Amino acid sequence: MKAKLINGRCISSEIKLEVANGVSDFKQEHRIAPGLAVILVGEDPASTVYVRNKQSAAIEVGMVARDIHLENDISQRDLLEQIEMINRDERFHGVLVQLPLPSHIDKNDVIESINPDKDVDGLHPMNMGLLVEGRQRFVPATPAGIQQMLIRSGFNPDGKHVVVCGRSEIVGKPIAILLAQRMSGCNATVTVCHTGTNDLAGVTKQADILVVAMGQPSFVTADMVKEQVVVIDVGVNRVEDSDRKNGYRLVGDVDFESVSGKAAAISPVPGGVGPMTIAMLLANTLKAAQRLV
Ligand code: GUN
Image 1 (cartoon, rainbow, N blue to C red):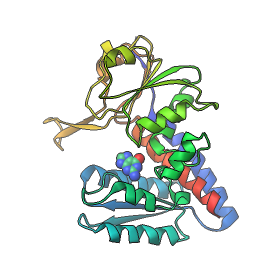
Image 2: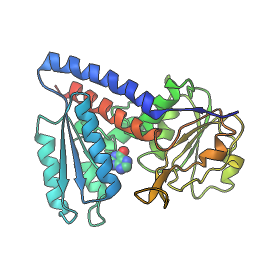
Image 3: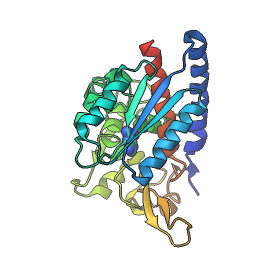
């Protein structure tokens, strides 16, 4: 039997509608719109698309959104100055700096320079610390989106064995911490595996829910999962495809063809986690505005 599709586009539209309603109430009460500033350094083609999508989604739900595009060779000091200006600017309740950054810039210095109250990416150590303590404020958008995908498609992680492949700061670590929390919509038994894991397939086969964020195209194959697993594919990889006008197509970290024959449900790439990340960024921005006014 073919797996149910966990459609991130549909679920994200649902969440964006809820955010738009919240924005409308906020505007009525405060006579201002929630504001989001998105900073992009350089010309990375994928980042340029992500930033444009974030800005247009923010405008779509009624927010004020500014895209601040800086030269690739901007000094770290000038970048920190820009962030400080946004930190002080009352029109912006949320700010994010698109990653990755050019190699001459220290990512950690940049993230730490963001006002934690405006850190709608949830990557500041203060917000990460609150998440670890179970007092989350801004949960990073991709993990928050994955949780919503599971809950809203009828696969509540409560009591399930979730296996996370990947240990990045943006996805692997925070999703593992989030889903292990003692609270509703979490409460899972979580195993994290990564490039240092011995017998990775032996671990992934134990998963009721498998979250894959390894950054390797079609890494997880059918022989690595058990029957009726629920799979969330976080990977976005460009692979060459001469049949396409742009010369590439996007694939996830999961071999969709083979795994969807065995799974109970699976998220596609594209149209899975990607749109959810944007929806949760907007939800965080509304929350930031509500906390700041
Ligand atoms: N680059 C890829 N994903 C993200 C994200 O969630 N936030 C930021 N700031 N950069 C990213």
